[in-house]
Amino acid sequence: MNIILVMGPQGSGKSTQARLLSEYLGMQFMSVGELLRSYAKDNFGPIVDQLRKTMNQGELVDHDVTQMVISLFLLEHPTEIGYVVDGYPRSVEDYREIEKLFNKKKKVQYVCMYVCMYVCMYVSYLL
Image (cartoon, rainbow, N blue to C red):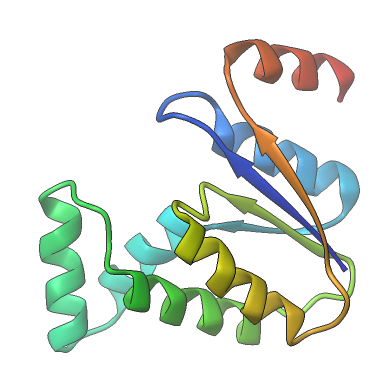
């Protein structure tokens, strides 16, 4: 299984490039930001209340909550080919945790892609 981690600053085109790449390679697209927003919208309870509050304040969501939402996504969207992950991990701790989640599945190969404006234009040109 291959995991492509797409990282970069806000507004750099991570989501756009990750979606294009996942479609081109036939891999499952996973945007952690979209997952968190969807989870906050569709669920209820104290964890969700805190999640909404954190997101509305523009702060980073708690590591454990993010891992829980990612775990749910992986259970609901299994794939043998791999995932293109948009905007995650955000720290070394996040990387170690996501590595544990994916390594439970099978042998994993990681590719990190840092997106900036020039890379976006180049990747768009290639696709």
